[in-house]
Length: 323
Image 1 (spheres, rainbow, N blue to C red):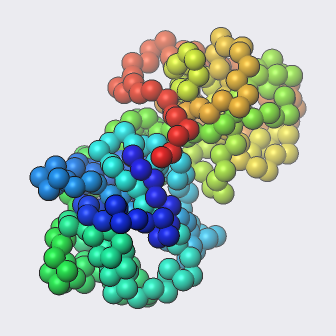
Image 2 (cartoon, rainbow, N blue to C red):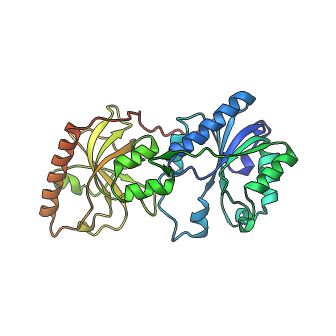
Image 3 (cartoon, rainbow, N blue to C red):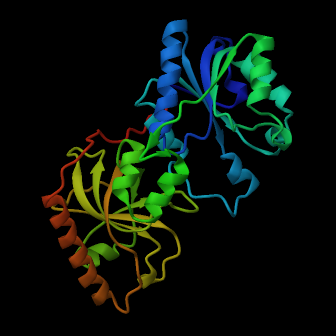
């Protein structure tokens, strides 16, 4: 899969494709259906598939303090897209200049001159360009003018309701990891590099792999049973805390994983953490001894969970390469 960052990196060889535009946050079953829709047409036309993304996501640009928590960072999104039939991903910077672009210019500059799109899949509620003036009907009219076909995204419904990133965020907020997995087609996961921490877990008898998430807000918080991929042995079972560690006055959201029956040095490793079951919310304790007792109970509960765990999906771990 080729990753293209920015207009300036488009080359003549990138012209001629079937494409889709969206956030693809989570790369859930609905997104996977769109990719399948693209792949089917690409095979008929003998063209590559192209996914067009924006960074930051438009809502994050227009409402930075009110934006919903992402399911996937860009790197995680690329890792997920690589699993499916995607040949190229174009990531465009969403800034003030881009937001002010007239929709007609967007169509001509990107879809016609830049990519030479033959077939475009978008949602019928898709809006773009200055003041969100561009819409599905404008794209369809442009397609007739410039010679490309515009079609609606296939809708995927589970339990009578459309699969969406919003629905997955709601499941995660409620601690329903089974529902989230059902909508994603895989367990919910986060990826990151293992970094040095303050060694508090080691002091308490439960050493942890500390993973900085590089997120303002996370869609998931609390204590979880997890599986970790990306190490020599995988998967590894673990007990994870994702939160600010209020007992020790923490403010930065951090993912800490106590890997069960594992003691190797993994600093610097890039790992994937699959969230399988929520045990409880994070809370503040009156002393480190009380915290230690709760961690001991959490680890015991995680061991009990894994004794009865039968995975629906089993995948290999993250890989750092993004091109």
